[in-house]
Structures are given as C-alpha cells and as structure tokens.
Length: 340
Image 1 (cartoon, rainbow, N blue to C red):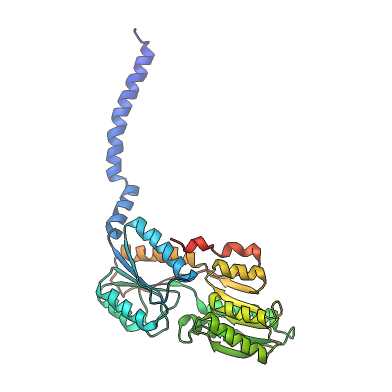
Image 2: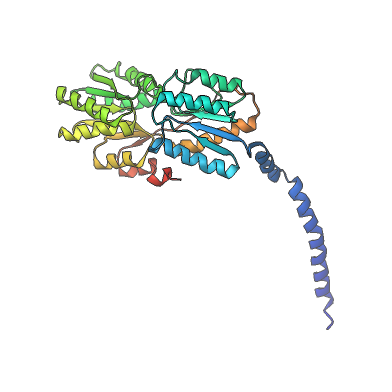
C-alpha cells in the first residue's frame, strides 16, 4: 500500500527528530549542571562517617533528633554511628573520646554542661574532624551549633509569666525548676528569665532549684514549694519532660488550674497532651524533630564547604512556638516522629 506523501514526510520527520534528540539527551545527561550538582554532592558526602553522642537516648528529645538524622544520612550514603551514655557524664566523655579516636568526618554532641567536653571538642577539630553541637553549647566554640537561643526562651517565658502573674493580679510568686545547673540550657534560660523578673517588683521568685532533668526530683521540689507557698502563681521548668513532675505535684496538691505550669519543650506529644488536659498552662516549643533536619543540613554544609575544621562557627537557631491549647497542636510532633 502506498502511503500519502504527507504521511511519509511526517514519519521521516519524526525519525530524524528522534535521531537528533536521543544523542543530545545522553550528552545533556553528562553535562547538565543540574545533574552535575547531585553528582558532586554524592562524591563529597557519600561514604563519610558521622558520629553522634547525645546526653541520652530513649526519650522524645534524643530520639526525634536521631530519627531525622538517620533518615537523611541513610539516604545520602553517610555512615551514622551513635553512643548512648544514658545520662552518665563520665560515660559520655569516654564515648566522645572513643569516637574521636575512630576519626569520623563529623562529630555531633549534646553537651551535658558547658565544660565537660570542651577539651575533647577542641582535640577533634585539631585532628581535622568537624564538630557540631546540639541545643546546649560548650564553652568551646565549634564548627556549627544547631539549637535554641535559651536566653531568648527564658525571656519569652518570663514575660508571659509577668503578664499572667504580675501587676497585682495574684501573689506574684514564681518557682523556677532548673535542669542541670551548669548546663547551657539552664544557665541561659535562668539568665534570660531573671533579666525580665528583676524589672518587675510585683514578681517574687520564691524558689529556684535544680532537678537535674529528673521528673521525680521536679515533683519533690514543687511539692515542698507548694507546702510553703500554697498561693504560688506559677512554676517554670526548663524542660517539659522534667516539668511533668511539677505538674503532677500541682495536681496532687489540688491546685491544678490555679498554679500555672510553664515549660520550655522540644514539642513532644506528651507535653501537648498535658496542655490539653490543663496540667500545663503553656509550653514554648522548639520542635526537635525539625531540629533533626537542621542538624542534617548543617552536616552536609560542613562537608561541602571545604573549610578546615575549627575555622567556622556556623549557627542554626530554632524557632519558638507557644502551645496553649489544642489549636496549637501542630507545634508538637507525634510519637511516630521518634520511631525509626
């Protein structure tokens, strides 16, 4: 069957186009700058080793960071190793020393206080290892910090307490439950809060004690304070998990809804539950699962940047979000955000 000339021309044109396009596409795949970016990225980061030593795992804070990091590093072909000191400072120092001796490309730490890991962090950078600190800074600066501006957290919560309890609206009595007293998360929150409270003569700080991040200790401290000051207006704890103990002490004393329980929080589901149940008055959430993404970004930035370890001090600050009711639930993450 003889095809019309127009059909023949169309088929010929298509064949010529295909013959022209296919080789060009293969060539473009080798020279396309967009594709080259990913090739260069893989060349730099794939096969690198990242070591992670938090204060502890097995809680919403450490686990949400770890899940986000692991997901990203697996995807990028980065080896990811962790050690869990389980709140033992000596074990953490030993773990950091051991990790440094293994010479990873990046070391990530959460400092239990401002001094413990300082010398080892400097040693790591001197050996050519990038060091990234999470949420609580050492006195030793490092290549990057990802986390909260705790001074600002203390300031924001203190201002809200002043608006709720100050100006003669109540007794003005406030109790503060610190974490570990030499940890940056305690030192900086306390400084930020006290700079606000000192300006308001209607606020009376009746207790400021350290519970060392322990829920039971926070309960004991708060129960004693309530016996001495049943007209307490507010208690402010430096970590939601710890401050759960204070909330339970307030409830046991029959003062739920009368004593305002504040906490800074990583935004875990239980803290939101307590807000909705009326046991927490407000929390200030920084969404640690989002921080986990920031940590991953900081790591690949350091690896791609090419700067000598110890010569940069990058900072990735977390946002703060008030959670005061069920409508703010999106500022907390759900339990599955910590489950690998």
